[in-house]
View: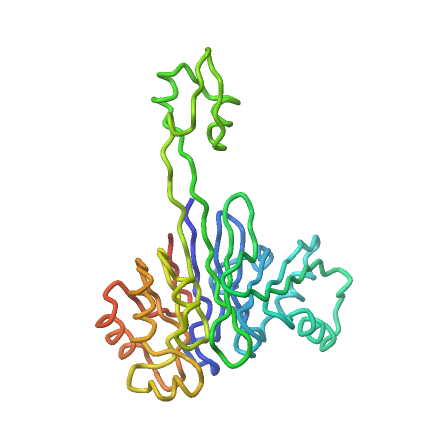
Length: 302
């Protein structure tokens, strides 16, 4: 089953007519995961045809307004659902306090809101979440407030080759299920191991690096990613401005992709000084050929 990424906002701090502020929706085998939730995110989801009540996890990079100012509206929408589902919000240290302030800033039926808040304070690269299908890693980046980068990693899967299994006398049933889960089984006096009848389907890796200067953790998070979505607020011409505001240029994003052996790079989070993305697109291609510039409502499948 494919992982589908929808870019809900590609602007830097200030939205434009063409670009909303930051949010990325990931359909992870039917589960809705949101990375950041800038102003207008739920409207962007509506335009994109995404059910806002499908969001189960929200991973916050940092607490600048362009990355979180849509949270309270989205939470109100979820609360208004007949059967509000649990939403888990992950973010850097101070997230619990800031969510608390948000809840106090408006009036709504917070008693119906089923949320869990998990603060992350990694020393290097640490797991923020894990289940049977995937895990999410996080690490601090180099921005003005605490800012986290994330990697969503799909676990490798065993694919049973039924022709091989049938040659050993196996049919669909509990024994195949055990092999699928990586367990050896006994059948007609012989031990059958998963590797005897299965191939490994390597899981996909998506890395999302928001506001930062180039730093070691950005390189390590992106290592061997199938897709790196990386901020690139400026072209190389404005490298000094990128340094001043602790952002990246096209060249710096491309260096991360190159040195981390990334398969594909998509840059996003563009400064309002660029009315279109042609200049950014042409420049990033010279640094990393398998790259694209993001646009609002862009969809990518892994």
